[in-house]
Amino acid sequence: QVQLVESGGGLVQAGGSLRLSCAASGRTFSKMGWFRQAPGKEREFVAAVTWGSGNTYYADSVKGRFTISRDNAKNVVYLQMNSLKPEDTAVYYCAADLVPVPVRTYYNYWGQGTQVTVSS
Image (cartoon, rainbow, N blue to C red; front, side, top):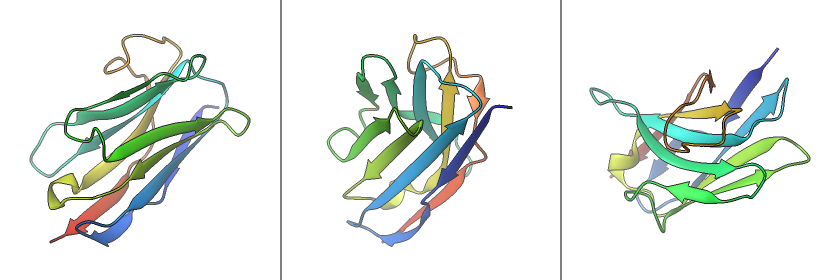
């Protein structure tokens, strides 16, 4: 059974940092990514990493502040979020798929989400 389990969300002040983790079980994927959805907004792509090459991809809004990384042995992907802003407040979802491209869309496996709240 495939499962993606996120952890690490919480409340942080603007300028602070959080690290999200997503543990995958059941199979190894070709790509894993993070998406977020703020209240009243559509879910948007945040970052992704391809499992084989380790290439990373970011939304322009988080580039330079967020870093995605993976631990192949543990089948875990991380999202280090620095210099957080109130507009980063959202539910963050881990996603994965067997198809390596496209990296910003097409994910069939999703976690339950973890809340990130950035206070001003």
